[in-house]
Image (cartoon, rainbow, N blue to C red):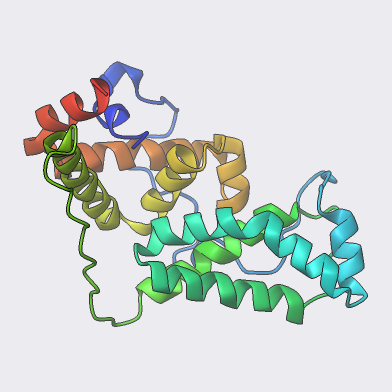
Length: 232
């Protein structure tokens, strides 16, 4: 997991900002991230999906399928990281894709990239879903066949991955989403700020506090995690 070793980066390597550690991050508390409508940005942005969106606006089903195929894998990966459940992630993505079709023709070019709007909607849907009462669905981990090379190491690594995922799910929503976008989706802080409708400084603060929280949650497993994710 790419963020594993970075969780215990030296304190001096943490992202520094002029914002104090206990500062309030300027994100909307009552409505997560941002509304689902396409956000207004200062400059007109290039969007590689523009042609497909124009075709979609006319009811072109082929364009819709191409748009879905282009984005569905990453959308699902983001949803799965946030909700931690495959069935729920599929529901979120399906609901979002249906929203794209039902709102075809309403997209306004130049206000934001389609992918930025898409990841924002996915994140909001996931947060809404996590806030609903639910029964935990614990998935079983496949057993490793006896005699398989590195079987013990693989089991231990899977267990550590599980601990990291549990710790991630315990982070505050905004911190968790920022960490997911940064470490799993390799987004820049600027891109994360666009999706989360906040500032780059706020994203840096979220990432810094997210790492600090993970360090606290995983403190007793620090040595094992350092070894597993630096010696592979």
